[in-house]
Image (cartoon, rainbow, N blue to C red; front, side, top):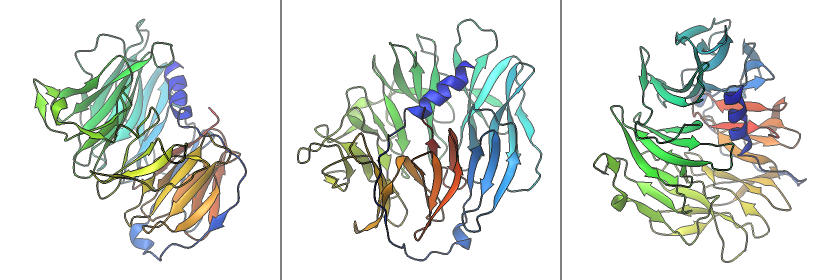
Length: 394
């Protein structure tokens, strides 16, 4: 199916290749595991699974999963797509209850629907929809509020939409990238935001404005076609369009086409940027005034860092002779260095999930690593934090 192929292509865009490396580990501070219990929801081939990293327990949630993606909310409700009589419909199953039966939440005849992501509080579900038999293959964007589906597709689009990437804010606003001709030679994208009432344009160009992400205080960062990272306050508009005069620029001398912005819990910004010193892209942290190289990997390109609440962070090296994952505490002391690939993901229990060579879904708890599953592709998501990873060769 065309939508499935696009989804896998989107996952493949995150790939980083892998080389052999040494492993260096150190323990993290003790945490109250019971108070911060988190679970991994992942696919084992076509079976949806739930994994408890504390006990090692694996449990089947539902079988017959299609590779159209799934999304889990903090309460453990998993939305996924099922093909019935030629239609692709969205079902939900409660992963926290053994033997829970799936049920259809959205009945939309003659459509291919697939979930894109729950809001952070689990109240809303964004999903993409394509009409069955529609020659133009246009893809629409909807939000389900628990009772009805709201069409939030922009009205000013001049081309057919290929796919969407989304990002929910902490107060249930939705930023999304609209992709046109994503698998063709003329692909480009525009950026929009939905505030619960209306959809407004944030950025649009003939290139690709992408990687939207919200800070905890409601700012929206994204990478624009001119390779600059911009920050919008999330509210300032002129004539229904984001006020670009209000945008903050993040050190344009450092940013490049690969500079995906990632917010820290304290509303600083992490990104991968050009290094005048090393000649390799480095992991930077920007505090609103100054960008500091926290990667310090002179022989390797390093990605944006993913931060925990306590200030510890993780990043990977990419397109280099060695490909590793680094984990450091808030004082930049190394806690883990091992071979890995793709952007990692933190759970609410402070465990780190990442991919290793051979497409092994792996979890590190601060003391030891566990292989959760092996396969290609594996989509895995932490239930409470919503952070996800993809283990796939594309």
